[in-house]
Amino acid sequence: MKQIKMSIAAIVILAGSLLAFKAQNSGSIKGSVSPTDAGVKVWAISATDTLQSAISNGLFELRDVKEGSYRVIIEATPPYKNAAKDNVSVTAGNVTDVGTITLSE
Image 1 (cartoon, rainbow, N blue to C red):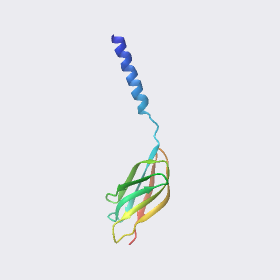
Image 2 (image 1 turned 60 degrees about the horizontal axis):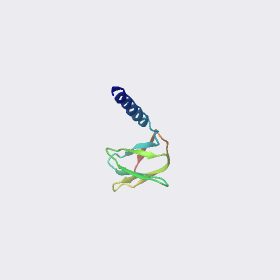
Image 3 (image 1 turned 30 degrees about the vertical axis):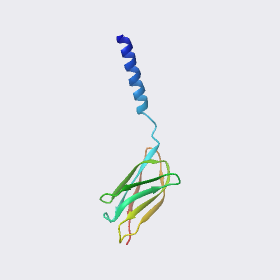
């Protein structure tokens, strides 16, 4: 009986460890906005996916972004105008830093 319990425990541990190494198929997009209080939300839009996140203290990060090419849009507070950055490429397991996006009045 002890032998069976040990075998079952070993199988459970092996199965759990195999699932822990699931292939990652997403990345992230990060950046900042200037002036720091001018941006409200950031959007990432591709042909098949749309994500959004709040901007805090001028910084943003979109996580679990599928691989592909995105248009990143900063939603601004008046009197500032929205801004966009095209052709932002995301690859699995990597962070794409778009740098600082400056909003104009």
